Length: 270
Image (cartoon, rainbow, N blue to C red; front, side, top):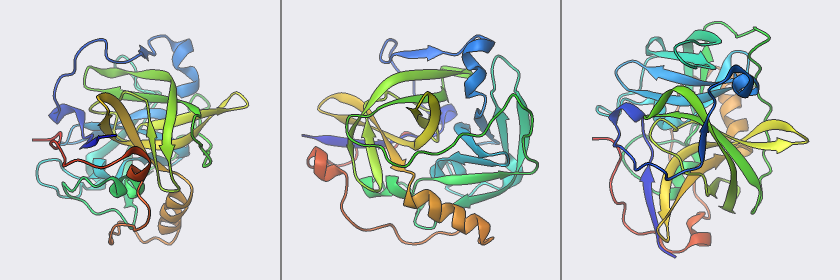
């Protein structure tokens, strides 16, 4: 099985996609969007936007690569980051500036697109002030996805930047302790979007969109597993270690389940 990996990056620097390629449903009405208010658009001054989700009143989980300028590769400063919880049709349920950003210690910025990089492509944006409104709730986490599980993705993207969309009943195609391959059809701006599983009817975050890929001509998405990597990231936050980078993780790659990795086609940022 041929596997072509293409890193998914911020929407405003992306390329158009063909219509009708995904089963996305835009959450237009207040009733539809109600339980997803903890998902929001992360505006990045001069660097487009990504998607993120609350995992605590003052903590937003997103992709690590969103925290770097797509042109210069420079780490963004917290003052250039704003989280718009529940952003829909020009209004947000809550707006907060960032106080601090914490990148997973194993994430290495740059245009290298090896699959193992997905495992550490997570970051936390700590907000200046917690979001305490009853309309916006942080999501619990679920760290035990398995092959065949059905999941949902809630995201913003280049042609749907003013309201979130949901893709339901994506499926887990492959996994290991570090990363997941899913059938979800994501696009520019979806970086950092939460991947949910319903646990007794309650949506819980099980992964974060990192990249999109093509497997046997079909579009899929890649996401970091949220078990150990997220615990490590939270430990960095609580130890006040701020942004920290180290070497990439080692170990078995998820590509072993899908076949040989072909050379990268291109990076989706100019």
